[in-house]
Length: 263
Ligand SMILES: [Zn+2]
Image (cartoon, rainbow, N blue to C red):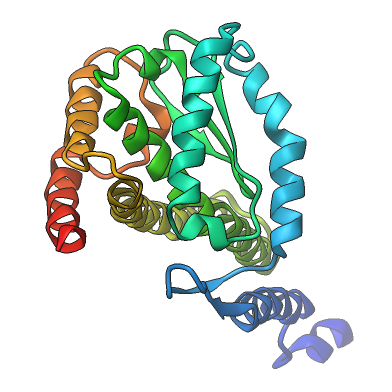
């Protein structure tokens, strides 16, 4: 009796702990805010550029492994590297501290391209072989370079730890019931999904700009979208499709970007 009386009217310690964890996560996230000097967009980032570069270089071999390693064709590797470096050297990407490397992956099935933080860029042979011209290759690589310049991975990492903090807080505060866990996971997904779509639209936009700066035909980015749309039937299109906005939707925005940057 005495015990339960002592507890009445007090906030349970686990709620205080939960609130503390959530507040700390929010504080850490919001206090690490800066304006991206190349895109002009305000973003939340906890990594330094050197850490992004190190992280990218460190995880590159593992990423390549997941797609059967590099395609053993030096001529095609050189072509991908050439187009990538041309896009970097003629655009704002050159002003960034990042170290850009371009890799053609052996995987002939997966239709994908992706960038690790700090400048490691990959395209699968599955996507490469479907491209109809060099301008389309430039479109794919330009989009990936834009993910690096936009620091989207670093941003996602910061968001991830915010999400984890909130999820942990909710779980602690609610005794970890399944209902609460589901709610927490849902909140987490919502935060990450929304930003994913924005990242893609920003990369499409910047990618078009890089293509024009390097002298490639930006209209061919629409050709890339068409290829992705056609391939979506039975193929897996992870980076370029499933987490991405509808290609139809992207095409409209790409057309707008072409008109805007071409002037
Ligand atoms: Zn993308």
